[in-house]
Length: 111
Length: 113
Image 1 (cartoon, helix red, strand yellow):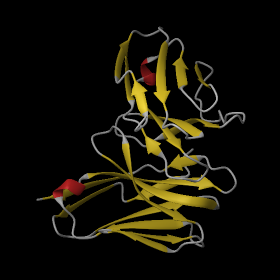
Image 2 (cartoon, one colour):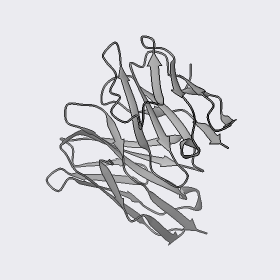
Image 3 (tube, one colour):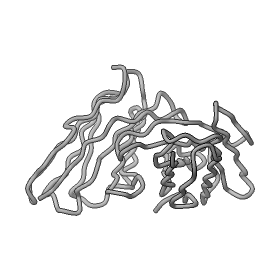
């Protein structure tokens, strides 16, 4: 069974707009990671946030983590057509380090 | 190597045949994962190796699936008596330590006809 669920399943926005994706998970975690996947092949790591962190930034990406709600969000600001991809969150249940991925959000940025 | 390497990149096999998929993790990475991804779906956890510890096989879907890893090196995922529902991309990933960033290979695309 999936540990994480992303919301929405699909998102379509205009270039320049911000995109927000959410991830919910079921159990206490050590870490949460966000990944991007283009064309159904290898995944690219975006950001890792630890359970004792609340927010991290990387370029146009901002990730928040709310362990009380067991949820995380990924914000992409000033989106570009090249951001079109599927985005996944992955969590490792506390004490296991076995990463389980969510179902993903398919983002389409229209030029 | 510079990244996680998987082979073959693409494999077409007849139903009922056995297939072997290979993964070369990044040198020095102690943890190795296998995932399965069907078309348009999320990643399904299959198996997790960590150093010399017993692997976590809880995601293997049936006894037709098995995986081996020798030490901290190459891993092989074997699917016996393949079925059409086994058609998917099989992704391998490795990490330098527990809880670290996971690095993915490009995957092996398996088509069972």
